[in-house]
Length: 145
Image 1: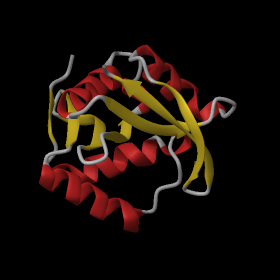
Image 2 (image 1 turned 30 degrees about the vertical axis):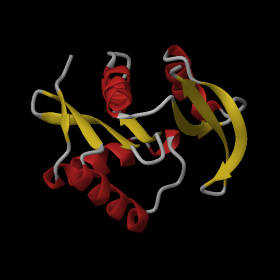
Image 3 (image 1 turned 120 degrees about the horizontal axis):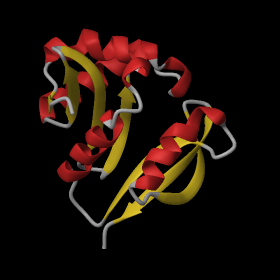
Image 4 (image 1 turned 180 degrees about the vertical axis):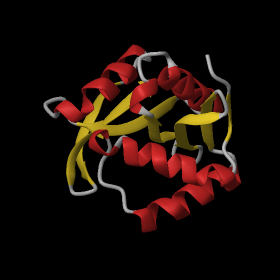
């Protein structure tokens, strides 16, 4: 299992490359909105990366204030090896409270199948339908009590 460590500003180009490689599985993210999000979460310690052989292959961002997983992505060629699970567990370990939420594509959207399977494995359940990034989404919730 590759090490997971807090992200630094030096990781931003690698994180942007990961997100570009995962474009089909993520809601539309603008570079203008993404850079401040990355910097803010790196500064507050709520962004982690997974590395393999010195290469950043995955990223997670979470919000301690909202008790929410904001973003989780793994390079396509590194999937299926437990990287997303390790990143998600790291984020969950960093989040306080009795519940954690995450937004992903709705059940009928094939772009969300892998993410929904991962979150279900950790015990997340459907909570409510919503729209985010002009895309039909669903909030999933993990209750820890």
